Amino acid sequence: MKKRGNFLFIEKNDDIYTLSMTPEMQDDIGTVGFVEYLDGDTLNVDDAILNLEAAKTVLELASPIAGKIVGRNEAAISEPALLNSAKTEENWVVKLTDVDEAAFNKLEEA
Amino acid sequence: MDQEARLDYLIDYLLNENPNTKEQMMQYKTNTVEEKITLFWGLCNIRKPDPVRGEFTEVQDAFLTQWNNERHVTTLHDLEAAGPQLYLWQGDITSLAVDAIVNAANSEMLGCTQANHHCIDNIIHTRSGVQLRLDCDVLIKEQGRKEPIGKAKITKAYNLPANYVIHTVGPFINQRGVSPLKEQLLASSYYSCLALADENQLGSLAFCCISTGEFNFPNQRAAEIAIQTVKKYIRNTGSKLHIIFNVFKDEDLKIYQSILTQRE
Image (cartoon, rainbow over all chains, first blue to last red; front, side, top):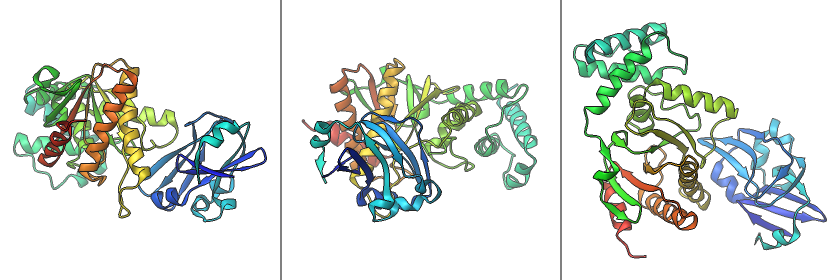
C-alpha cells in the first residue's frame, strides 16, 4: 500500500514503511548536490529527517508520519543525485517501524 | 566626531582590516559625505563575519544611530489598521520602530555580500551594523548546516529602530514556476516567523514581501499566501500579535490593498 504526505511517498511492506521522493518533489528541487541526515531515530509528524541542498534550495525534508528510523539511504550521502532517480530502491529516504497503522491509513492515497 | 569624521574612521578601519578590499573598492570616490556613505556601505557588505576591534563598534553605532534617525521613523501608532491586528504600510522596513522586522534572507544567512546591492537583506544588515552578521554567523555555526527554506531565526536588531530581526529564507522560483511545494514553503516562512515572534513574546511584527524580490515569487500569489497564512495563524492560535504587511513597491501596495479590503 502506498500513500503520500509532505511531498513524499510512504510505502508499507509488512511492518516496514519506506519514505521516498515523489516526482513532484524531484522536479521542484532539481539535482540534489548535498544530503545530510539528522541524528536521532525517533520521528514525530513533521520532524526533520534530512537537509538537502540543490541549486538555490536548502530544504529540510519533514516526516509525514511518526515512527522509528531503522534504515537511512546511506548511498545518497556520497551520491546525492540518487534522490533524483526514478527508482524507489535508489530515491528512498528512510525506513520506519513502529508506525501507527491508523495514522498511515489516514494519509492521502498516492 | 561628526558624521563625516566617523565615516572616515570607519572606512579607514575597514580598508585596513583586509588588504584585498583596497583594490576591490578602488573605483569608489570619497569626495562627498554621500560618496563616503556608499563606500562604507559596500565595505560592510563584503566584510567577513570576523570580530571587530577597538573603537569600531562605538563609532559605527554612533554613525548608524544618527543616520537611521535622520529619516522619519514610523511606529505602530502611526499606522491605520487594515483589519483586526493587521496593518499595511509602504516604505523602508528599516525605518519601522516595531518589535521585530522580517528579513528575507538566503540559506547562507549571513546577509547580502554584494557591495551596495539593493535588496532588503543588504539594507537591513547595513543599517543594523556589522554585529548582525556576527550574530547570524554564530547561529548558523551552532546549527552546523545551512538554513533551510521556510524556517525562522531571531537576532537583535542592533542600530535599527526595531528591537529584533527575524530572518527567514523563502522559496526561490526558477523557470519551472510556482508549485504546491513552493507555495507551502512560502506559507511555512510566514508561519515560522509568527510562531517565533510569539515564542519571544513580541507585540508587533512587520513582514516584508518574502520571496518576491530576488527570489521571483509572483507578487499576487505571494500576497495571497502571506495574508491567508497570517489570518489563519491568528485565528488558530489566538495570537495577540500586531502584524504589519510592509510593502516597498507600488505594485505590492495595490495588491495588498485589494486583498485586505475583500470580504471573507
